[in-house]
Amino acid sequence: MQILDWTKGGEGIAYQSCPACKAVWYFRRTFCPQCGNTEPLERQASGQGVVHALTVVARAPSEALRAHAPYAIALIDTDEGFRMMAHAAADLAVGERVQCRFIRIAGCLLPSFEKIPT
Image 1 (cartoon, rainbow, N blue to C red):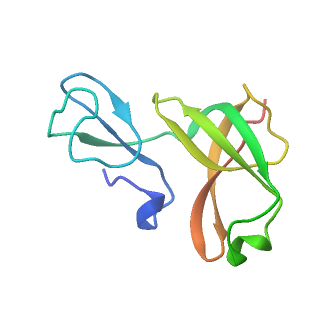
Image 2 (cartoon, rainbow, N blue to C red):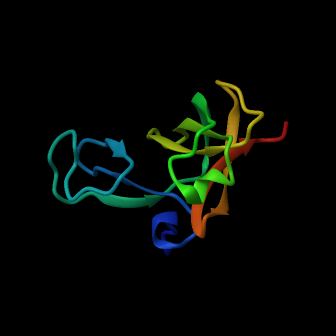
């Protein structure tokens, strides 16, 4: 199975896990940050999780993002156990279940989370 990763142009979120201590993390590393194992596994995330924190960016950090401001950024606790930061729908609240979709901003493919319909 091919693992899709938005940082490589695919519409998916890849993360790593340790076969020795079972730790999970986001951001590729050549070793486990918990036990030092040098053979981490790459896995495909479901794209679902819970909102941990939210903020609204009113003053964009670059000219390319200025046209999109204000926009929401969220910390998401994923179902797989790692936390990631991503764009988010403006109507989210802390504690809500969310699903990732992918958007293009300033020519870049980016993860963005929205409510899971109930």
